[in-house]
Image (cartoon, rainbow, N blue to C red; front, side, top):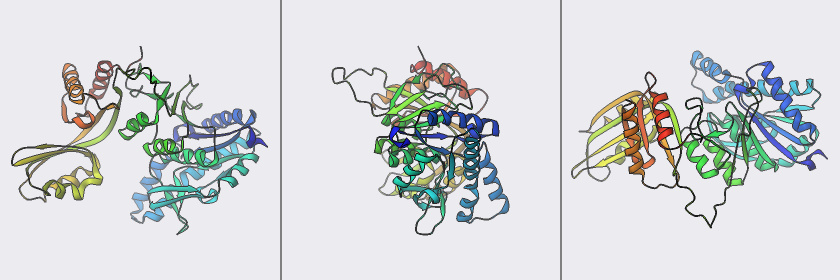
Length: 409
């Protein structure tokens, strides 16, 4: 039986599948695993910018029905899965495509933001994989109670692949993307960025949560929970990988406890944020809670300063929520509210949580040297926000990467 030779889980994103030619390249990559005797489960995203196109169509018809929106959005992955299965068949590899309902990828939660519960019958999926490449639609789950498809949120195809890996006992989960691994900072901003050969789950989770888009944070959390090794590689549609990065459990060296002398491990970038500054908040129990109660889901990061009688709150929020958050804050009597949009959040990821105030001082001095003004900061995560104008991001990223040793030697 093929499954006895090992099972591999692979995932390909939309950029890798944006044309028939690129889909054929992906099929040839999968064929190498198949020809080596391995069973393969392949998870796919929608082609190119297809999800954005479908979202625009949903908005254009004017409906606000989340169930029907999920039905429309799920079609992008259905197309990719069918095309990849046909491309594999065309080169002599048996393959069939399946959606979340057919494979029993059970999910719960709200439409548009579901959460995986389980893979209902992993033995059945393994039996399929023993006979042919199983091509799975990412981004979607199946609600048993209603029978509906539920969209799992942006980036969730990564998690689909990890869930399939964990449930079916895959050797590893190969996630192919448009960069060759996990970098301390986006190599498209800083070409000589340092790449991690291996990186632990905890560090990867911090990077993903704060905006490093190579992996979804829920995907990393699920991999950590079930011990799934993730290999992040350059997609064959983009070129040839030189090794990529492995995300896994890393055991420390008890004979070298102080081995890591550079606590700053990466710089995460998040665009399209704004800042809301709230001052003159009465320093009394419940006042800050009153403000946060209505706006917490929209907050990216917050910082609070306390005086003897008054407090101030500064919040980074998603830019499309900026006016909503500011308006909600103004409902609290007596506070002063200002807001500014078109910002970029830069987070220095520090797993050791050591000397954050010193790092923030270094970051502000570093930005000053390249004439980039920072608008807001939060010491808890060493966060700065800068204006999204001109070459600010490029200058800031390069300066911070050099200051905190995030470039290759």
